[in-house]
Image 1 (cartoon, rainbow, N blue to C red):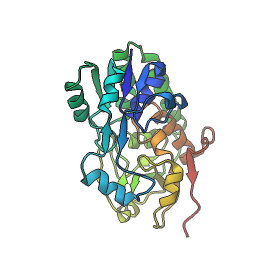
Image 2: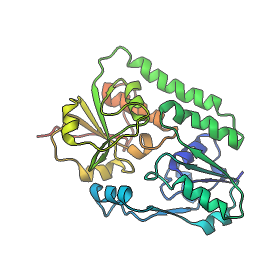
Image 3: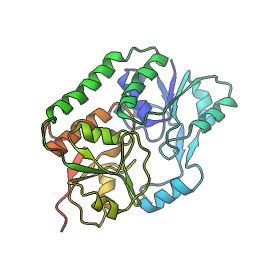
Length: 286
């Protein structure tokens, strides 16, 4: 089985299913696990996140043409049996239409599987969906992941629940929707500004203040914590944490479960300390 992943979350799924040795192509953003670095890269981006600020990046990805390129020649050379892609967000990865249009004119004939989860349950269900196509029974893996979420939810069940504003982009301010409100709930918080499964819209810092959060979580899409720390808002906020969005919150892969565990520590100081780079508490605003 030869697999090409055009979505970092799908690469996470392939790794969780124990099939990383079958991965023959990946995106330029696939960065986990470490062994994926050996896999050829078949996509590129026109946006330099290190050179641009959040407002400039937003303008490029939401108001311009496609920001991703697909190396058609390399894709054909790799001759995959299965291509994993998505149709949830053209900003997050190369679009499903681009992939299918490319495959239609190529003589490789792979199966194209689009992953489109919008809730926590659907994210975990993707393991079974992909497993069925790749010939792996994922039910035990999914059950183990669900149990980890359930264990956290039980431990925080009787604790006071802080009001939580999760932010997935800084300029403009964009609340984290889809599965993130469920992650917050499972970790013992009350999610604000977005409902489970919701594809959110930009808001304002004033709206964040008006929601009266006890805790603000900064998890910009595609930004590791060190990148987020370079562009913090200049607005006074309550208790604020910078989290590893790409690893545990932005991508609909199995590591969202680790995100729930990290949040449980952030909100209730339960479980082990977050690992290096997983979460940073900012100093109080002055």
